[in-house]
Length: 262
Ligand SMILES: Cc1cc2nc3c(=O)[nH]c(=O)nc-3n(C[C@H](O)[C@H](O)[C@H](O)COP(=O)(O)O)c2cc1C
Image 1 (tube, rainbow, N blue to C red):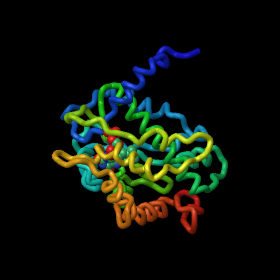
Image 2 (cartoon, rainbow, N blue to C red):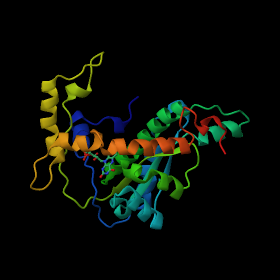
Image 3 (spheres, rainbow, N blue to C red):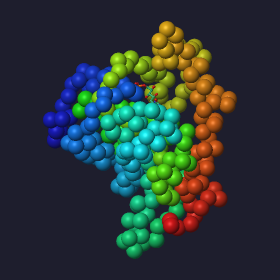
Image 4 (cartoon, rainbow, N blue to C red):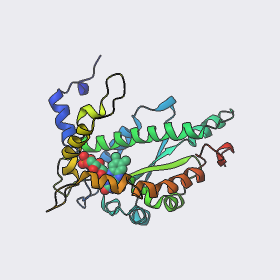
């Protein structure tokens, strides 16, 4: 039997998701406890691999919040009503296994795969619930800018890896509706299909406004190059993440992952 909350029209569902905006400037208003409880409840209602709930959220406040804002170079972590670091957590499940008297196995690559998947599902549930309550937010992959320091600051033990931060608050900005790729490029029918050069050009034109700045037309390819081009920020993050995976016992080859949790 379907529940009443599952009976929204296609137009209502589209309108809800159309109203999504990533927002980086927030009103200086705290989130009422009931709203905080609700978004955390929603997070934990996410589907979860192997029933295991392979995630932890670190809620930030005070000096730690300010420090994470600085380390991520995302100032809105400090100004948002609520800020979290969303982590993959494949530590607790092993503690549960061991607490029940079993021996915990080791599977670092699988841990990364399913732990990050679970963390994203739960974090996005939290953001969606917040948007249902009238808030907006921002995922912050900028944790990679200070990953090692953040692991130390938040005292994250082996098996726990930050995915991203998440800020939530009442919007104080007039945010544009940002485009997405044409659906044909992201939905494949039975088999993967590479786009044609013409489709890539058309897709880039469609996406250009996402890179626009006041008085400057958008150049999405240039933005993507800054991230994914040679020497771009993703290439710079690569050794940072590799080091963090090793530090947290999540590196499959020659890592301390083979050792029991300490
Ligand atoms: C995993 C992830 C990491 C992101 N990292 C950042 C970030 O570090 N800083 C930031 O300002 N926005 C960040 N964003 C927000 C994206 O820039 C934003 O979602 C995208 O431009 C699309 O805009 P929209 O969400 O308003 O449609 C991130 C989003 C995701 C999903």
